[in-house]
Image 1 (tube, one colour):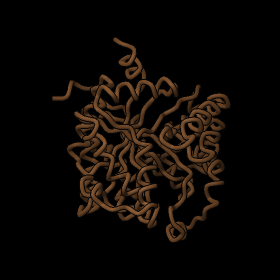
Image 2: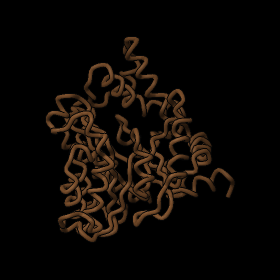
Image 3: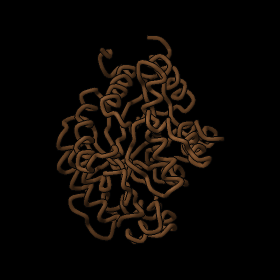
Length: 342
């Protein structure tokens, strides 16, 4: 086993799906596609399959992650299922505990509770949710309350959550890394290498998390999951095209406040973008990793070496579902999870 192969085999490999819609696709079809993709991910041997939370976003069908996670868990047998994540400021901790208690009771030893501190993207969405921008500042208090419903420290019981062990993870948004360390929880950190100064901020946050980590009943030692937007194809150009739709949707949302369904990449690349659109599009592209298998093996092995993470959480929102599955299969091959492609 060479050094690159050894590094890739030294971590767990997991998948995050955001249930994005494609142009002309009904949300119901996108949700069914997520469940179908979860079964395929399980067959490839990945460790986890997580879903995300978004509200009031036309291009995203995954607005209720615990409900979608239940559908995924019911359709699979072995892969761990969870959320990446439930945005705790949008919910009462008691309700979140009860939801995960039900999930963990129905699917023992398979459910993960990924938690974030983001609030609604726009003012009207935050108003509809009954939260304000400052709600994120109370994340630490909410997290303490939520964990208390599981370990019995809360003033009331929360059946069926009370007494259950449901692994909790904190998404590193803002002060998320410090909060994860203080609560002794695993950390989910986004890969920031494409942003100006992003890699330094990422590595600093990870180092600070490890240095200040306090062991808990949840985790005895620091554990870092790195979320990576990654695409692999038989050529670097084809891999690059897979990520164009999400980059354009991100640029559109930054300039118009709406995240749209995914368009075909060839069509996007022929558009005349405004200066602002081009800037946001290029920024989104800079944070994505893509290439053929040999290139991506080297890229990911170096990333694992620099960060020292224990797990990669891969995400890819492409217009072509078959090409996304092919990329996921190729990545599984690099990780030693599946047979060679073709």
